[in-house]
Structure formats: structure tokens, C-alpha cells
Amino acid sequence: MKFSLQTVIWTFVLYLIAILLYGYQFAISDQVEILPILDLWSSESALFPKDFYVQSFLEKTVTERTPYLWFLNATTNGSALGIFVLHAIFSLSFYAGLLRLGEWISGSFKVSALLSLAFLMTYTLTNFGGNELYYNYLIPSLPAKSLGIWAILFWLKKEKLLAHTLLACATLFQPLVGLQLFLIRTLVDVYES
Image (cartoon, rainbow, N blue to C red; front, side):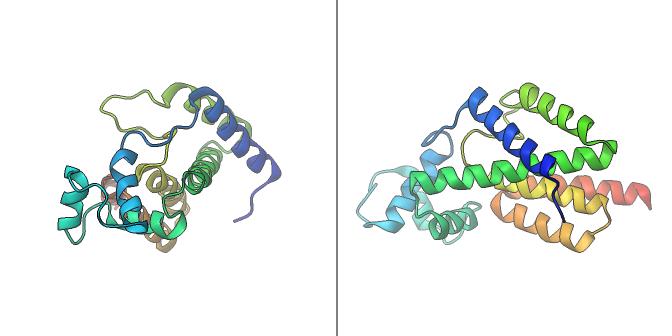
């Protein structure tokens, strides 16, 4: 899939606007649970002996966050810079997917860019129920939704194997994101048949 120069430029513009409007945050929200596990894996097991989440995680073999933690451990080892780089990569991928999806649906890049900008300014950090589409910090939902938006685009383009592969990867990062997209896709497929 080729990207036009305007898509690349707008992707970076949207990310820059997101950073300027909402900033970037580190060591908050779900990261409070995730970062100690990465510290524990990269140093010594005597850390966090009374931390309920860490001890509970260590007692289980696999949890819903295990694939995400393995990914972070392999790519960043918990470093703040590495986590920021992943945030940038997944955010840029999300905005590129949003632009491409909007262009595919509307048939116009200008409409897609304006809608993506309106989306960014209206729906980031504003929702009912805490289920954001974009996050200004790296948590499992951001890579899952970044992969998910591409899965939707490829599904609409009838490239189902790629769509299913991306959806499976999204599910590994955040099972609820994958489940939501799977249910939507299945319902639409049933309705169309």
C-alpha cells in the first residue's frame, strides 16, 4: 500500500496537534501496573514485594496483559524513551489509518483530513465510559486500535486475510478491542449475507 506525501504530512500534523493539545504522559493510568512488571523482569525479583498487582501477576502464568508485556519487554525493556517511541509509532499508524479510512469512505482526501482533524479535536479524551479511541500515553488499547483501524480498512477493501491477521494481533494487545471489532464485523457480514 503506497502512501502519498499528503497522507504522510497530515499524519505527522495530526500527531503534532495531538501532542500540542493533549501532551504526552508517562507512568500514569494502566502504566502504573505495567511498568513495575517490566522493572521486575529487567532487574531483580525482590522489587515490589508487597505490591498487590505485581504479586498477583507473578502468581498467574498468563493474563490478558501478558502478550503486551512481552512485546514491551522485547522492544523497550521498560525505558521511558522506548515507550515514547512506541507511542509515536502507534499514534502515527492510527492517524494514517484514520486518514486512509476516511479517504476510502468519502472518496476525498480533503474531506478525510478535515474529518480526522475534527475527530482529534472533538473526541480525544472525551467519551462515555472511558473507552477512548486515542490515548496520550501508551497502554494496550493504543496499539490494538491502531491495528484495528487498519483491519477495518482492509476488511472494507475485501482483503479479509490481512484484516483477520491484523484483528488477531489487535486482540493480543487488548482482547476487548479485538472482540468489539470482531462482533461488529461479524454482525455486518451476517446482515450482508
